[in-house]
Length: 216
Image: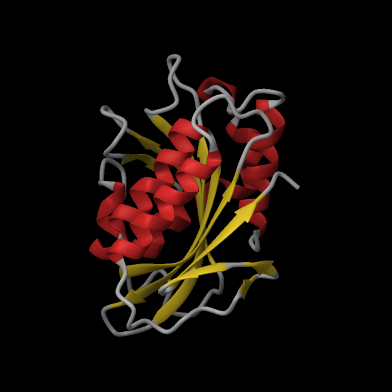
């Protein structure tokens, strides 16, 4: 995790969950994450598969130059990344992992910028498949950010941080499913990533890097 807002959300999420694999939605106190609210979003789903924005912070909406409330989360992403992203989100909702995603966004003028995004599981009305807490922050602040909208984005790296208590499907199952999906949907013409990402050892799958992380 590179960005202060991401670290703030992760620290707070970890604090309020305690010994549980995921906290309750009602446990969240926005005043405790005031400094990160502009970079925070919540996703909601009816069927546990398709997620839409329930709310999104001001910096996130400014990145896309539009209000994101009720918009499908998948609409932000390139079609080739949908299968990998859906598999990653299942690891969050079903196995209560924290997902850390890096991606490159591009404007219609060809301007490019890196971003860091984190997805955190939440329990709501007894289930973990209808709500998800998230954070999204740009890695830099160019003059055009908030003026020229990001219209296309591609995943550049993935990392899953598993909870200490695992009482659902084993992490190995999701790791295999995720890497199989990545290999199936990404062609091999992209420039390979280095074998390390942000100091972590990475396994490469075409243009994606998968990093297995722990709580520490």
